[in-house]
Image 1 (cartoon, rainbow, N blue to C red):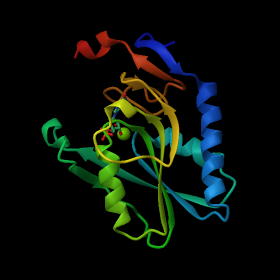
Image 2: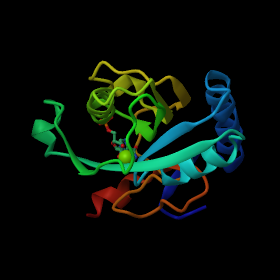
Image 3: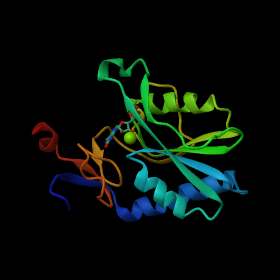
Image 4: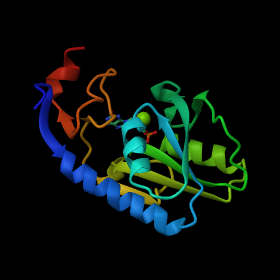
Length: 180
Ligand code: XMP
Ligand code: MG
């Protein structure tokens, strides 16, 4: 185990099984395929890659990059779009793929932003859900795991851009972020 990790919350095996479950749920909703998965950079990159590979329907991917304004304006729900979609989503079946919902501010904004482009369907798939922290009124259609309010890394999630490569999801030791 990486020395910065206090505890493994979700093992590689648990994540793998859950990804298969989630992809089956999505396929059930869109059996004819032609689904566009929209990964939110960078945290969802590993998740979206695995999710896509376990979907045996026609599926394409696109990415968006967003950043929240400072902490104080976070509550206002303003999110800055750093990279928008490459493709038009009008009349398409679209699934937003996110690593984690915390307050829900990011996803709430993204959902409204993409909804305005009139996709046929707009769903949200989220691997991790810190439900206790929710502020915005938003709920994912496909949820992997409900997790406690701890700072987690691995499987795409980072602390200061590190630990995205861990194959499991772990709780970061407090001394790691206290050091900075
Ligand atoms: P909101 O509050 O908008 O935040 O739902 C979602 C974004 O916050 C980040 N986030 C985390 N990143 N470990 C991380 O690596 C965590 O425990 C964590 N909690 C929130 C993440 O970027 C997510 O997209
Ligand atoms: Mg993120």
